[in-house]
Amino acid sequence: MFSESAIKKIGRSETILILTGAGISAESGVPTFRGENGLWKKYKPEELATPDAFRNDPVLVWEWYRYRRDIIRSVEPNPGHLALAAMEETVPNLVLVTQNVDGLHARSGSKRILEVHGNIMRSRCSQCARTLPADEETWRNGVPVCECGGMMRPDVVWFGESLPRQVLEEAFTAAEECDVCLSIGTSALVQPAASIPWHAVQAGAYVLEINPESTPLTPHIQEFVKGKAGIVLPELLRQVREQQQKNPGR
Ligand code: OAD
Image 1 (cartoon, protein in one colour):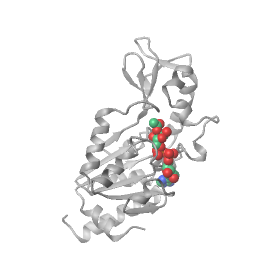
Image 2 (spheres, rainbow, N blue to C red; image 1 turned 135 degrees about the horizontal axis):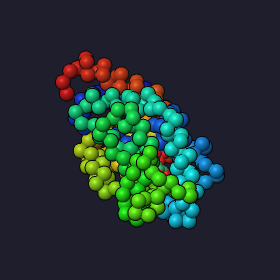
Image 3 (cartoon, rainbow, N blue to C red; image 1 turned 90 degrees about the vertical axis):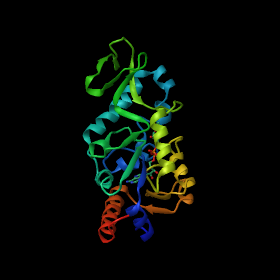
Image 4 (cartoon, protein in one colour; image 1 turned 90 degrees about the horizontal axis):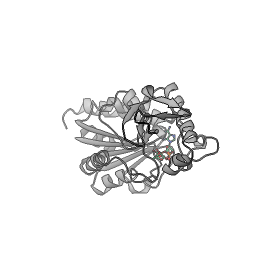
């Protein structure tokens, strides 16, 4: 499944950057965005996850986010998430950058997480920018409202919006400094997150991708492992631990 050099590189690395996308949560039962199950009421994410869509029909946009929140509340982290959380113990510095808004990495025990697209279980006031966890929201006529009177929106990044600057800077710095980069379960299409592994390629890192399908990144990296994250990642963790036990020291 993996080359010997990949296992050695990961086992000896000082800094690993991991980028995850919707694919890592697919085996938990969260639909991906571009897969066949990704559509809701025939809308594409690009039609609902925008500031314009929210201005035009906030109730519809919130209906979609409530539907997605309900899915996320009902699912559990899968062996892929758990393997990444356990991988923090095998490397001095592991930075986990996720495009997912589902919070499943935190629920599985990962500690250093950069959520570049926000978190669906939080809302933010469109007037005063106050943020609230989902369970503290006050709803009126199909939308949560802030105590300032403003309308709350999901605290996620929409198409056409900038990503949180500091979080993104940390992700790009990690991409430039890492020895190894893993790109897992992402179509590698949505910018700027998709360019994080490209930065790692350019900075000379060993880049490994895990996905059942190839992506635009695939031809440019050292190793592509075709498969599901929930199967591939526990095996990767097992082999890295075995290698570290055989060859202690970096
Ligand atoms: P996509 O839905 O574009 O891609 C999911 C990827 O996961 C695809 O490449 C699948 O082949 C792969 N995949 C499916 N099942 C898998 C499994 N079991 N294990 C590993 N990989 C699997 O999702 P993202 O790349 O995350 O942005 O999409 C990026 C962004 O576009 C999202 O964060 C969201 C979306 O619109 C915003 O909402 C701003």
